[in-house]
Length: 95
Image 1 (cartoon, helix red, strand yellow):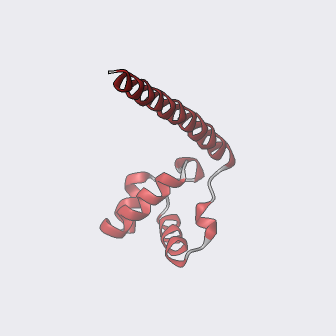
Image 2 (cartoon, rainbow, N blue to C red; image 1 turned 135 degrees about the vertical axis):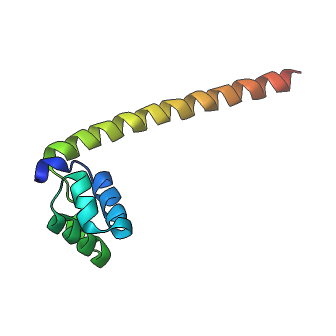
């Protein structure tokens, strides 16, 4: 058990959600994290403690890179769709 097992905020949220439903002991064993860590995450999330949002720097960098890439891909997709709509509108105007 240890820090290396949890990589992202998304994983923490999933673990907290599952722990609330099935219990901290079962969930901690399933995800191979300490029960005390799961209880602490639940407490911090429920109390609105911003330290819950902290992730490990190397994982945060990877997550930021992944999100930036995804954002760029989505922007390109939106631009492509907008271009298709403009072309269709121009075609319809000529008819």
